[in-house]
Length: 139
Image 1 (cartoon, rainbow, N blue to C red):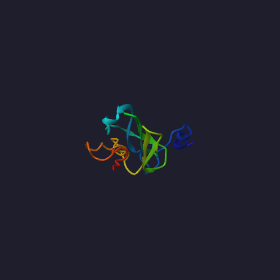
Image 2: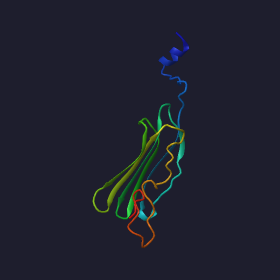
Image 3: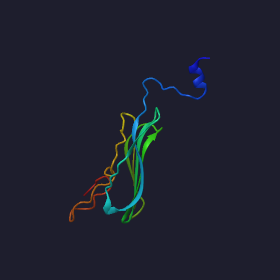
């Protein structure tokens, strides 16, 4: 029996030529802030994914009155590639949920979301029309 066949039978997986592990940003955040504290920034760590896996960003903001709960997950995933997608749900006055998802494999560290700006823009100056919130929409 050849050594390669023996290793395969023992559960060793040989890397396929041309398939390299992807480097991704990695991290999680779960915290509640005042609405006035947004947007937020974070500093992710780096990780090497198993061969064939992609990088993902998942960010969720849940606004309830004057508070916002931020949930972030970054890292490796088996999910298929997905362009950045923002979904917004309103559940009555004072309660909304906004999510951002992105899965990529095009280059190392392609999951480079480092702040909540895709979902939350700063409020306009006093006296300006309406509130700029979710995805920077204004008047």
